[in-house]
Image (cartoon, rainbow, N blue to C red; front, top):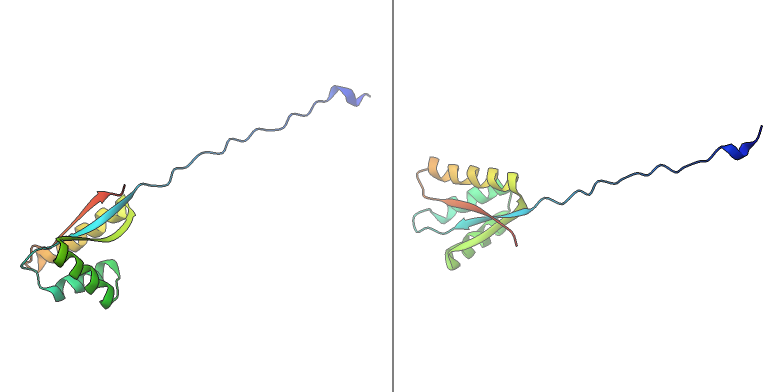
Length: 103
């Protein structure tokens, strides 16, 4: 019996390249009707911010017209923006959150 007849070939494994999901910004838009305390409460409830962080984001939107609240994957961004906007509508305020792709 000769062992010369056996040839071993290594198995080739292809590693799938998985791209990171594209990130989206959640943006708080300023309006002149929604009370500051309500905006801070929504930021705390929906985005789990501290009182101080929520106040800073709200004041940035108040001064500059808009403020980035959070950067996350698209499905999370759209869900949270809709939830926060719906809280404002339910309370009778024109509170608006939008999403846009991050560059």
